[in-house]
Length: 389
Image (cartoon, rainbow, N blue to C red; front, side):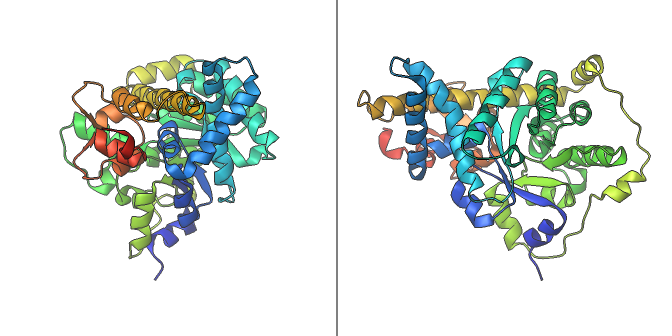
């Protein structure tokens, strides 16, 4: 009998949620998606040092001989995301998602310009727009930016999506794909309702994505639904049939090793026959619904802060790496700075709440699975243990 991953691949496109190219090569997904936390982690792995150094050298040439260090690092940030994307596209036959700086999430015009710039970098490398998704946070401003980009033929992946109002606005903006965050929705409800778990069919994240999927198929929206941010394989199994699912390597392994019969749970034909009320969406309605949804409001804000922190940490890492390339510093300071950026209360360890980035990265770094990351675990996971004392 085919394993669970093989069965899932027959009804859903699986996407690797990682910046680690070796994991992508292992699972051979059609698409891959990254985010700032994943790229920041991958950038510290020794095997990707050539990508980091190459991005910095490119940025230095692009900036010109009299450019400031800050300008070189800012150019290198975007270049690094594109460099990882180009490497990934050599492995996957489909698309890669590359994220717009989360600090631009409430700036429509800046997000448009950044999306255009990232696509121009891919085009310069010979990659067509059909193979890249520009990833933007699902704020009202981000959705409006995506609407403009889509009209220009630049396809978008709207991320940090937690509420129905975000999903409807994305569909009406004709974005290519959305990434509702299953696990982060579950996290919020577990904390809010003081529960340890939910049965798979009652998982709030699963129910949210199911509702969005059925709404899209009922009203013929072309926007694809890609469930993301999973905490366990049961959530994935409950969403079998979704257009796409982006899954961390750890859970892909569990599915590949899993046996049994996988039943398709989401079906477009069944959705068409459902009694679902259409939602009319405009900015006023969006903002009103957002205010009335504390989970979506809190998790969107938290996600933007988390990804912004990852970008700031990456800036520090690139600054140090650039200085070390010029023999101006000893490598290791940025790893400490990276830890301090996440240790919000200064107690010497990073909790899941403080991390606020990719769950996949947190799990990989939390080697003893005690729910916190120590400075030693962070250093070891990012390839810098020998630099930290």
